Length: 261
Length: 248
Ligand SMILES: Nc1ncnc2c1ncn2[C@@H]1O[C@H](COP(=O)(O)OP(=O)(O)O)[C@@H](O)[C@H]1O
Ligand SMILES: [Mg+2]
Image 1 (cartoon, each protein chain N blue to C red):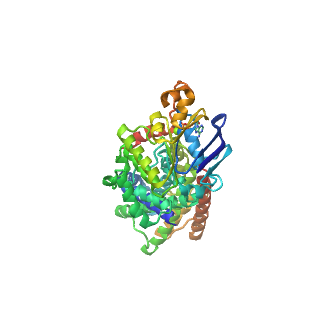
Image 2: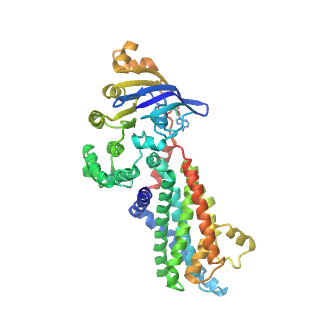
Image 3: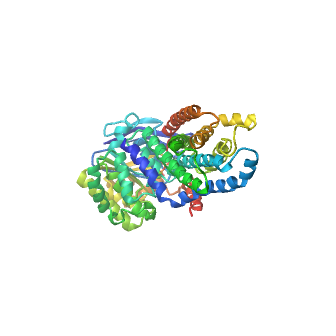
């Protein structure tokens, strides 16, 4: 369903993704596990037509994101690492907007939007603007939204970042259920080991832009002779702490706070 | 088509919901109208130029459309920073349609804003010479709106954060406004000012509005119309090109 061959992406002199190759089978849950700045988001951006690779090739459901972005976009759903809702629009409007952009017929929208909002526990709040939502509710809405056009593959970039354990649990339960009932292929990234361990069929550990190990949890533990995935992860990536730079987004948010009311 | 529509609706919805923006954006026109209109009125009259409020009102209406549409275009920076832009850019929709939907939405908001200011102007005492020509004014407002939303989008496509916004306001929007002849007649202006106004698209918009409302032209109806259409098309093309190049 997803295949990447010798994928590389440079930003000036920084190599964010270095010669990465992997395959994800249909209806598999595949996790990219890695510390901050490892190159997870960059990989997802390349897989989802948002960024051109410096070299290497990608196939999504047999299509090339570079040459057939439109076809690829119809088949995938994405939950970005950063928020991507319109905060002035209501939950329902955000869903409907998405449906129109993805050419979902009106009747299907009328039927699927309520169902998805119910599944993700947002139906009662459907007419509230999303700026009134908590982080967890926004995240659930983003996931509900990415499922509206019945994608074959969903990409989840650190979907549980900043969520409380209850919400995280619920979110993964829903992803798993979806994967089992509708055979949706899932590509996710996280830096929580226990999550990868719990949901993923196969895990690739990525660090400094390189895949340093790949396999099932059992295989990863076996290769590193560790008794938990966490130990395996640390023994593979070392224990130096990676700082995440304050992005222009953070600066912007602070500015915006000053300007609002 | 439906995606142009949904983007258009989105702009309108956002506008209608943000009452503070609606009210804030009326403050400036009212201030210009009252302070300048009544302040300079007597001098204008003495200079033999007639009623200043009559002269100024089309300029203030043009200004309103200019500010509102530039803001709608520049709003792209917010969408980018708050992430919503990604949602539209990964959709299986040609970017040109997204850009068009946004621009039409922004222009519509700007025209609505202009209509409100027409009402404010008439409360202040402004009287169009001939109400039959007011629909013509509407066309000019729409052209100004499209032109500057497209320009705003083009500029915003090049800026990735908020700091550029002040730059655009100070070095683009304000000069475009002040040099357009919105506040003073170009007829007797120094040659340099007149020449600069000729290079300012808003000058043709304001002139067209004045023509429609008062029946007096500086450049002429056809020139105004032609220049506005040509510039709007140019900015749409440039805007679409730059919007298309946005990488995340
Ligand atoms: N647009 C960009 N320009 C320059 N450097 C970038 C850009 N995007 C990501 N990087 C850099 O690439 C590296 C990998 O980033 P990313 O893929 O976001 O990591 P992760 O998602 O695993 O935390 C980081 O060092 C980051 O600073
Ligand atoms: Mg990331």
